[in-house]
Image (cartoon, rainbow, N blue to C red; front, side, top):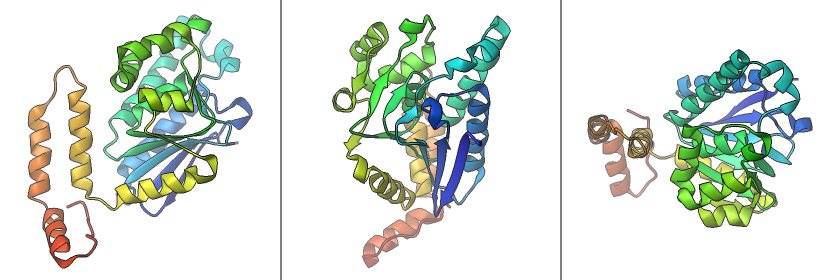
Amino acid sequence: MNKILSETSGSVGTLTFNNPERHNAMSLDMWRGATALLEQFEQDAAVRVVVLTGAGGKAFVSGADISKFDSERASADAVLEYNAAVDRFGQVLGECSKPTIAMIRGYCVGGGVGIAVCCDLRIANETARFAVPAAKLGLGYGYANVRRIMDLVGPQFVTEMLLTARQFDAAQAERIGLVNHVVAESEIESYVCNLAETIAANAPLTIRAVKRIVRELRSDDPDIAACDALVRQCFESADYSEGRQAFLEKRKPVFRGV
């Protein structure tokens, strides 16, 4: 069974973590496969938004596949190899030039939280549950992961999540800012679809600039010149002319990313 699935519909690419019998727990091969698919979406000009979700409806990603620890994380070298694959996925997801949306059903635990906070937006259903149980497993939770969560929820809640290792329900996750919106299960697919299509219809150069600026704002050494260059590119683009013309003609603009 292919444990990482991809699908493209119009301008929206969907990556599905497909290990439902283990609540979509991640193996080394899954991290590598997910990275490869994200890189394909990045190179596909037809894809303007990427949605990440879990198969089965009971979990987004429940963390690492503990059943594979003896084969994949038993030695120091194996741990380094595994962590490098996880870090590479996080880097590719975090630096993706296209907007990313995590559609979260059920459990979002450990590495699942790490994936979700690398996305630009997080939409959860009412049964979603969030936890970082590293303290219950004796695992270290690295600087980059802690920083990403803290950027969303602040030091007080990232500390609570990590020290207690307890679960936060969907309402709590929304209240502290871990997710953007909580939506009923019956509505979440249509909600995420509409959100993705709304974003995909907007100007790609503007979106790319916003994404880069937000990323640089999180950096200790922001590249302001690169941000300014992306903003100038927007004003010099054919899409800027199209946007103005469409506004005057009271029609929807058709953006081409140039």
